[in-house]
Image 1 (spheres, rainbow, N blue to C red):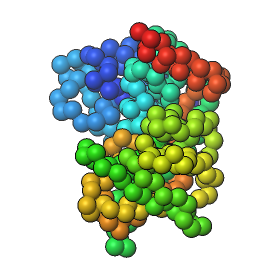
Image 2 (image 1 turned 60 degrees about the vertical axis):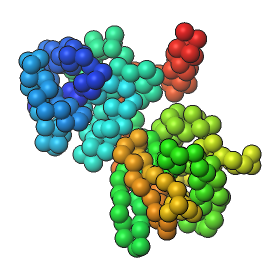
Image 3 (image 1 turned 30 degrees about the vertical axis):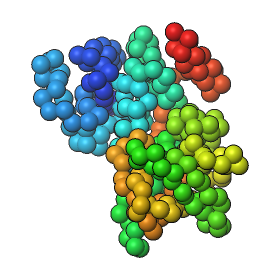
Length: 294
């Protein structure tokens, strides 16, 4: 069997001096796997002074069998579009705080030896197609693993949004905005805004208002076949933005249609253990509670 190629992708702001990536490289190469190191975002010249050659991610991903992300959930989200488009599974090593999507903690790097026989399971996570149609023309288009967030700018004004499905009008939201999330994203911004936690391997579309000004505002959990359209009613008078997976904000205008639906692309997360979602949730939420107590 030909040697499998593994991309090591450390967040340089989390993995200081690439210590975790270099240790992982040593472990994987000792069990016969080929490795290359790429960064999740461009940082010219970084790594050379540490004796680690940095390769271009967009070039190496084309022939990769697995990508290992070192960082928090934000690092995996940053990489989600790239790995999904190339159908490369990703294994997360948590160097952040909660790390709901990560499989291993920093003190568990020796578990990477389990990759020797390429014996692991893969969880398929639903993604979203997110687009903005303006005057009949698509002016924004991406895929997202966690969510698409429509929100106001820094000025404290109410955003008014009309939300539809292909079946017709669903609801009107007045407040700071709305989160349109996947089950994976249900433990992110959606949860912080009061949305429900959904098992991440499920297939659902979540709609969670952000700081609604009406006590009758509800969260919605829809089947994945629905196609959601959101219209900002007063985007010309107020700053209203769209952000997918916490990425760069896109400024919306009156008449824009924000369209969100289940994508044909998925993110494949590698699992080395058989921990249930309930076990993971209990551990992560317990960690968060302990942090708050400190």
